[in-house]
Image 1 (tube, rainbow, N blue to C red):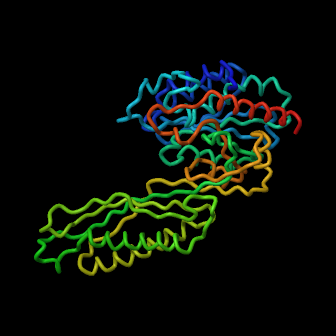
Image 2: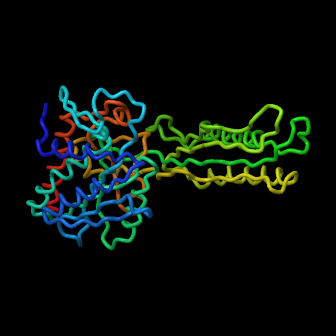
Length: 387
C-alpha cells in the first residue's frame, strides 16, 4: 500500500477537528486555512454569506493572467446526530490503514491534500496557476458554490479546468444529475365534514397536485430522455413528505408536502417545473371559486445544477492524464461541479475515498486513496510547469 505524506495526514487531522456541520459557522476552519496560506506568502480572498457567519476562500498560486487549474472542496460536513460512532467523529483516528472521522472522505481529505501541496506549488516554476477554492454549505444546497460560480462568471481570465475533489476513488467523473426540491403549501377552508360543499379540502387538492407530479415521474420513466450512464437512466420526480388535516370529521384547511426533481443534465428543469406550476394554478383557480383566500404556494428549498462535461473536452483529457485513468463515469450524487461548469469553467469530479462512506457513522478514507490523490497532484504540478 502506498503511504501518504505525514504532513497530509496531520493536516487532515486538524481539519477534522473543526466541527463544520452545515448548521454551524465554518469561519474557524476558513480563517485557519487563510493563516496557513498567509504564512507561506499566499493571499486569500474571503467571500462571506449574507449572515457573515460563513465564507468561501479563494487563493491563487502562480501567474494570475493565465487560465489555471481550480481545485475545489467544500468545508462543511453533515450532522452526526443519532449515528453510532465507534470513536469521536471530530477527532481523527487511524485503524488498519483507514482514517476515521466526519469529513475524511466527504471531503476534507481533498482539502488537506491541497494544503499539503502549497509548498510544492510555490517551489514549482508554474506556467499555469493553481486556484484553491474552499466553499461553505455544499451539503445544504451548494450555497457557497453558487456564490463562487457568480465570482467565476465575472473573471476576465477564467480557470482552464476545475477539479472538484468529491470522493470518486480517484476515478474521473464527467456527469451527475441536478436536483431541485420544493415545499408546497395548500391553504383550504375548514368546515365540518358534513358540509364539504362549503369547505376547501386542502388535503384533496394537494393529492391532485401530487398525482400530477407522479404523472410527470411516469412520463420521464417511460419517454425519457435517457442516459444509460446513470442509474436510473432518466430524470426522477418524487414526493417524499405529506402533512395535513387534524381529524376525520373536519375538512382540512392546510396541507404541506415536499417534492423533488433529480434531472439529467440534458433535461430542462425549468420546463418540468413550469408544468407542475401550471397545474397548481389551475387547481388554485378552482379553490378560489369557493374561497377567494384559498391558494397554493410553492417554495424552492434547495437546488444544485447537473454536470454534463463533454467526453472530448480538454478538461477530461487532463483529468484522465493526472489520474492515470482511461475511464470516465457519471454518478448519481450531486456536487458543486455543475455550477462551476455553468459559469464557463470546464469541470470534472475526482477525489480520494468512496462515496459509499459519506454521511455514514464511522466515515473513513483509506490511506492509499490519499496517496493516489497526492500522485494526481504531482502529475498536475509537472504539467503546470510545462504548460
